[in-house]
Image (cartoon, one colour):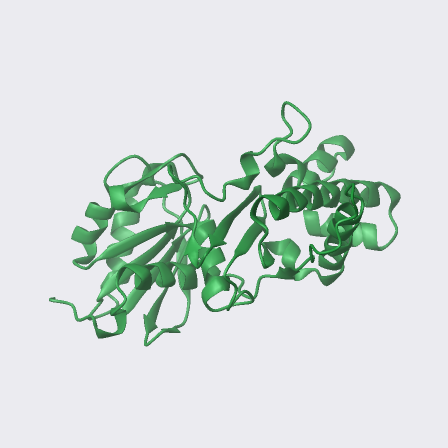
Amino acid sequence: MILTIDIGGTSVKYATVIDDNLGEISSFETPKTWDEMVNKLRDVAQNFTNIDGVAISAPGVVKFKDGFISGNSAVPYIHHFPIVDSLEKLFKAPVTIENDANAAGLAEVKQGVAVGANSAIFVVVGTGVGGAVYLNGQLVRGAHGYGGEFGYSFFDGVNSQWSVKASAVEMARRYNVKHDTSLSGKDLYDLAKKGDGVAKINVSRQLDSLARGIFNLMFIVDPEIIVIGGGLSQNDDILNELNQRVSILIADVKGHITDMPVNIKAAQFGNSANLIGAYEVFKSYYPNVNEMKTNQ
């Protein structure tokens, strides 16, 4: 049995995997300190017997082979110390850790909408924009662990990173500051659909930025499929609009490119994506996962 865990900024989700089947998902509120996290994870472990391994999805720049997480995230205390060693001592079992966006992307490639693809890009749109790159059957982590960190790319100058320009959360924040409201990205999509002029302008700008970024990625990587994750992926109208906008950008390229298909699809997995992907990473390091037996 493998315990798979997804560490997020507001909650920590976990489930068991037996014979490749994900069990019931449970969760607890993300603790405020590392000591509290250790105590909560110890409590979780005590609910199970025969944990043969632990697969973890976490924010930040995960450098699993070095045993730590660099960068920064909404869970600051998991960074910059030998976290893999600490967790293996806690669970008394092998532990793997993968970046959350990489894990979600791998879930789609191994079990989801991108199964069979040799190359894929996963773009998750939420508080910011992140993602993963899958090429030649391999997850591209990069030389320093920053592969797939699309949100850092710039568009039109200072303070115009993709995470700021293309995020539904950032779109809503800008709207709320200007109009003294407290709407969500979904609220703005709904208002735009009903014909609200100001909401339509804001949504159009966000989708333009998202489409341009996807266009750029298509000509950098030339993937078979682009998978969109996050809340936006659940909105068929928005996803269709995004496909159209990317298609228009390609049609406007000088020389009229006609052999670059637009294949943008919604992610299949929602809250379970990171858990599934973390398990797939564990399997890549321990291919005989279903034969593993703990020494406990």
